[in-house]
Length: 229
View (cartoon, rainbow, N blue to C red):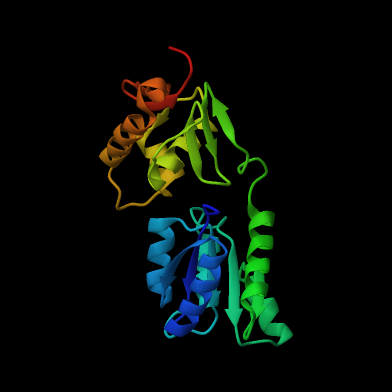
């Protein structure tokens, strides 16, 4: 798997299914939403890596949703590709001005869609974030979505993976539970602070005796990732 999750937003189920099949064959994970309200909730809860967004939907349009996402600092960096039957130049300009990173006119081929999606992800992924990180034999590879301990694969859930990736790329600094919620969960107001403690315990258990000591509790503050005792 690529480790990337794509949210497909379209009010027509057959189109969502067609896109999902194409993306899953290209090793992407897919989420689906049939309207803007459902899509916005999924963006906040699931933090997809990219959004494929239909222009014309009942109620709130795709363009309106794109504007809303780009105005919110928590979702502004999530890339958006507009999918629409509108092919006129002024419509394309309107979509791009709303914050879309690319614009694909229906009908399109699955191969074109996957190629454009890969191109947008390459442009919008911060430099270095896809590089493997190795600390004392604990290696995390974002590209393959694998974690190994001295070469042995570890079973780690998706939230624990994001938490570990954040820790390994932000070493030797203490973070409060609220800061971790913002960075890893995206500031989801429905997640309580104690949820962090639950996932920290799961992460330590997954890391095992060799590496659980790297996740350190900082009394009165929160947690840090450190090779120092």
